[in-house]
Length: 497
Image (tube, rainbow, N blue to C red; front, top):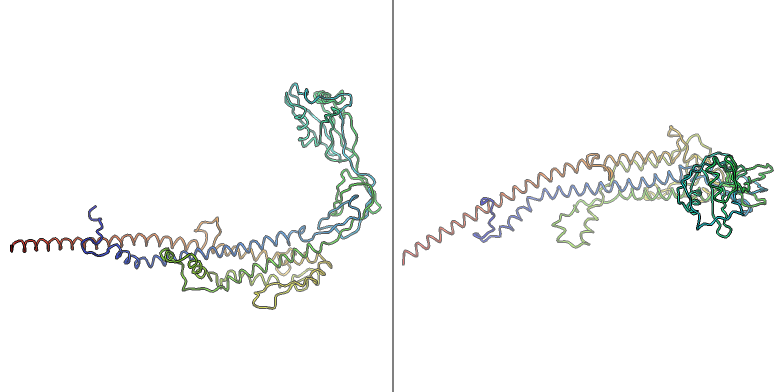
C-alpha cells in the first residue's frame, strides 16, 4: 500500500497535481483525437439516416398517391337530386350520365309483439337458463342460424341487449314503455327477410316476450315484410334488396321516390393535386440531399472535447458544432448516384404507353432551367390539367405501367426501385436504429474505435501511475535529503556550542 501512496509536493514545494495534469493533457491528445473521430462517425451516421428518412417519405408518398389506382384515378359524382339518389364512384367507373327513377325504396322487415300482451319491464326476469335457436333469412335471401343463450335472472333490458348484439340474428330490437310492446327490426333491408323459431323452447321464450307463436318452425309473429328497392336505370327496371348497390363501378344510394340524373366524371383536381404533391415532395427531397452533398467541410473545426466546452458559452459551442458537423456527406457517392439515377428515371420515356403521354414533358412537367436548382421539377399547371382531362388513364400508365423491362416501366415504379436501392446502400453504410453496430460499415468502424479508446485509457492509467510513482520517489528523496541536511546542521551547530 505504501508504494501506491501519492505525495503531492510537500517536500519539494512543487504543485505535483498540476504538473501531472499538464503531462497527462499531452498524453491524452491521441485519445482526444479518437473521441473526435468517433463523434464525427456518429454525426455522419445520423446524417445518412436522416437522408434515408427523406427518401422513405418520398417513397411512401409515391405509393399512397401515385401507385394506388384508387388514390390517383378519382372520380367526381354529382346527382341532380341528392334527396332521391346519391352516388360515389370507383376509379374504374366510366364517365357517363345515368338516369335513375326510384319506384320503391327498400325497407326492413319488422316484428311487433301482440298489442294485448303488455310486458312489464320491472317484473320481467328469466326464470331459467334457455338457449334460443332461430333460423334467419337475410333480406337478400342468405341464410344464417342464430343461437343465443339467456341466463336465469336476465332482465328485459338484458334480453334486448343480447338480441341486438348477436351478429347472426342481425336485428335492432327495443322495448316501448308506454305500450309495453317489443319491436324487432332486421338491420338489412329486403323482401326475403324472415326469422323462424326453430324449437319449442325458443317459441315459449318469445311467448313470454308477448309474441303469439304456438309451435316450432313458425315465422316469428307480428311481421311486416320488408321490401326490395325497385329502380329503373336508363329505362331498365331492376330490384335490389338494399338501397345501396353498385353497378359498373358506381355505388348508388336510394333515398326516396323520384327521378335523378347521376353524372360521373374525372376528378381532375384530385389527380392534379396528387401529381403536384409528388413534384413538391420530390423537389423538397432533392433540395435537402443536394444541400448535404454541397455542404462546406470545415476541417479546422473538429468536435470539441469536454474540457474545451467547459471554457465556452452555449452559443459558442453551438456555432462551433454547426461548423464541425458541416460537410460530413459532401460529395457522397451513394447519394449523388442515387439522385442521378432518379433523374434518369424521370426523363427516360416510357415505352408502350399512349402516344403523347410517354414522358413528363409531354404532360407539362419539366426541369428547372436554373442549374442551381439541382434538377427540380416545374409544372405547367394549365397543360397538366388539360392532359389529365384528355386521358386520365394514360396519365396513370405513365407513372404506373408495370413491366420488368425498364424502358416500359412507369416513372413511379422506376423511382421506387431506385429509392429502395439507394436506401439499401445507405443502410449498409450507416445502418438503421434497430441494427447493431456489427451490421453496418460505420458501426464496425465505431467498434474498432471504442476498442482503441479502451486500450488507450488503460494505457493512460498506467502512464499516470508511473508519473506519480516517479514524483513520489522524488519527493521522498528530497524529504530524506532535507532530513539529512537538518541532522547535519543540528549536529554541526550543536557541536560548536
